[in-house]
Image (tube, rainbow, N blue to C red; front, side):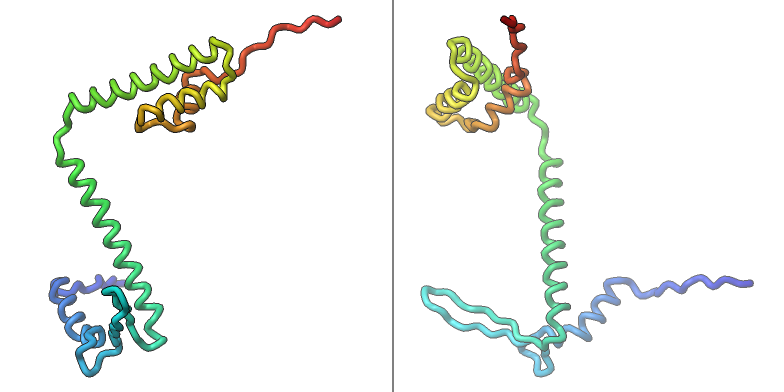
Amino acid sequence: MSSKLPTISTTTLPDRFSSYVGENSVGFNPLHRDAFLDLRVNSLRDGNVCLSVVMPDTLTRGFVTFLESMLGLMKTADQRTRSAVRQSQPVDLEALAAKEQFKTAFVDRVCTTFDTLTGQGMARNEAISAVNSALKAENHPWATYELIRSILSSSGRLRSRPRANRRSL
């Protein structure tokens, strides 16, 4: 019982790829006489053009699959590029501390203002809206009702208060 190992081509990938592309790229070249793709450009008004790719109906699925794979390739390249740029940038500890201090000051301000307004008898939803309005008046970048409500909820300020025992008559 002998087992055969698969033979591995000694031709390198770039060589195989270039021979494949060289043989089959004629069909994608609209200037070649044996091309199966036809590229048409029609002039429109205001400096616009209409670009049309004409091909046999049997190739549409493959062509669309190719375009989708290229989109996936470009998205992956974009994500990896952004990740590599972020990783190569030095970490500025002072900037991180300043951001954290800005966030802490914002949370403290929201909670303090909310406590003051509810302490004066304002309803919770009205107090949230009032805090949001005050921050929007200052053009604060984080002035949104949802964020303010989230901060107040996570700090425990929106929990229901225990009701006093009611006496029955």
